[in-house]
Image 1 (tube, rainbow, N blue to C red):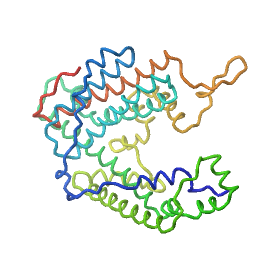
Image 2 (image 1 turned 90 degrees about the vertical axis):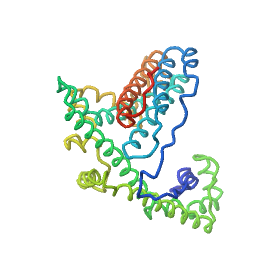
Image 3 (image 1 turned 30 degrees about the vertical axis):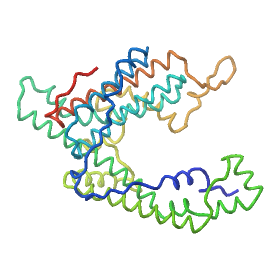
Image 4 (image 1 turned 60 degrees about the vertical axis):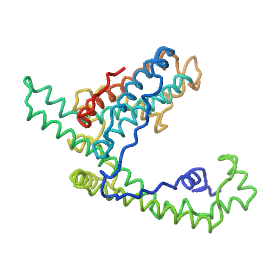
Length: 364
């Protein structure tokens, strides 16, 4: 049975290729503005009062993150602000997803979220490292040294944006690859299955009802639309990546990427220390190599390369571990929430420099 490229993945990609096109000059990032949701208007205090345990802890961190948005009055986009808003969104979303894991005692999802939040925390620590180094090495404040440290931090914010855009570029290049387009929009596999009652029964037993377009005219139109929008997105990314603020970082990413086959993504950390090609090496540089074990554990869940973490062996029985122990889940959720809070605190430090004229409200 030929089921390649006929499953839900192709259907999903086909259904999600439409994007809103931007009408402004792509080259001028400062012609764009930031949209800031008014999350601070939510009754965080009331929600916190009604919660308990890890749920309360998570809500406190989310309230802190929401209050940061309240003070952003200058919404003109810059690459540094895009980096800040991207990291804020990741931290808030991670914290928000913890509520569901607690409701279902889902240790499995917590391990995945922990892995994502841990790496995000390492990213922002790497960005703000020059500022920390200034404080660690300076007993008496030196304005010139402080300014130099902040200049380097802002450069790392630009590097983060360049690194993210570069990876987005790789994604869009793969999406526009003729092999990808041919597989997504090829009507032959689906048509073959649809014409055979036996093949269709086999397919639907695995993937569910065959609900995929097989009309060549419709597929050709969809492919052309996807190509057009994909090329537009790729043009946008390439335009931003040629901006003078990002080109030094792009050149470095290209050089580091050239070491590997197939132009693969590079470690964010290696942009500042080329020996830090992995999370493990970054943690070693920080003197906390022992924390790599928690990163590996999350990776096992993400890649599905574990049995020991999924099946419980006791009294001669292998038992699927669906929910986690409630105490373990609470502890894990608190740990991830603390990582998010760490990110939020550092974002508040960065915010004070990105929006210096704004008065930051006291955190909850």
